[in-house]
Image 1 (cartoon, rainbow, N blue to C red):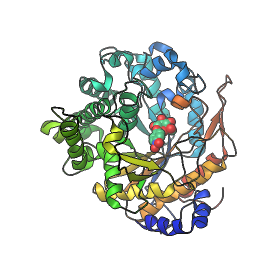
Image 2 (cartoon, rainbow, N blue to C red):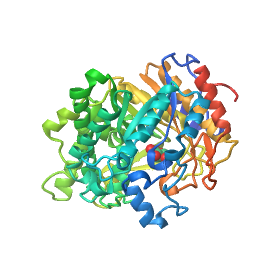
Image 3 (cartoon, helix red, strand yellow):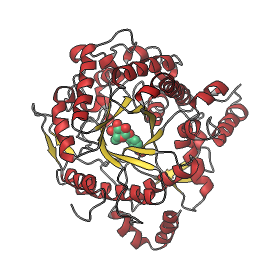
Image 4 (cartoon, helix red, strand yellow):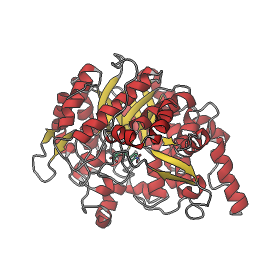
Length: 498
Ligand code: PNW
């Protein structure tokens, strides 16, 4: 609220806001130190760092297949075949983690490294050995593992049957998760089922921007959300029934979300955009009533029946059984925050009919004074993170939040001052939110090392450590931001200078 008012006031004096925003800063409010039990770490994902795409019996994932079959779709025609080679060189990552002094490390397990065809009856011991060794080395160094079960690398053999568009994925995923609990749950106490359902469903099953390349916006993405929510819910219930008592861990999910500002400070517009993005996943899991947000259910049903003449809503019903399984199915909310937008309702129908864009029917834009990164989607908006955490506090009963990703892309500079400004302002935004009663308990920066940035290949870097992808040794070299982050972790506060 405050920042919205502030923004409006500053908006009247254009010159002032450009100074504020161009520096990518935020005003500090309250206590200058994080609580003692607040933890800091870094995050990565398997396909982006491991390499060893076919090493030691690993099976194929949709990202192996996609990068091999469609090299033109990757900006520099690269792939994750070897990338930073963490499968072979995890000790270099461990050293970097120790140098930073992190409390936790969030990494993901490649499903096909342990179960080459996705089904759990075929196990690959070498893959199990690798993750056992990663987990044991982390723990031996006092670093808590946060394990993501799925960061976009669906086994090809399961994609053949539709991946998240086939409800059988619910059983496959929960079987996989059960094996992970059995194999690693004695030592792993923080689990994340799925990374960024929005990106999985919207880009993979709606816009065909990433594998499995399904172009069915407004239909395929909604089917994907439904199956994905069920897979998550079933996994959570399984953990509670079979493992929680003995293993005493927590299970959550990482949701990607931006904050939406309104130029006219219209809170209904803000809330509607939040419900169509964060709410689509968060409402079924974290609200008291469960199910998709009421406004989304109502509007999509109306368009489907009245405008398109369908028999039922394009947004599949979760039904009472699944609504209850999914409701309350997380011990914490993982939040991946990168940037924000302004939202303005459109007077004309937008996009194709049907499409998610048409359902949402709002225009998105940015403030010209927000500093932009070398990515067309990425602007530095720390107020967005503070507002997002406050929105979650108010909307979802102050559920525990762990920030599981937050970071800034550039071209790989060692003197990465832009990244430094981004981290300083965003970690300050988190502190402001904590000072304002938000139950945020952990922060993981994206990312430990430079890695394969999906369709952007190696042209866009997010690492605190640089990796020369062409060298055989793949040394990890700390950037200036690594020194800053080390200081933040040590002091649990945001320093004025590095
Ligand atoms: C994350 N946004 O996705 C992914 O989880 C990572 O694997 C990836 O490397 C990282 O972002 C950087 O791209 C997001 O526009 C990308 O708000 C963009 C947004 C959110 C999440």
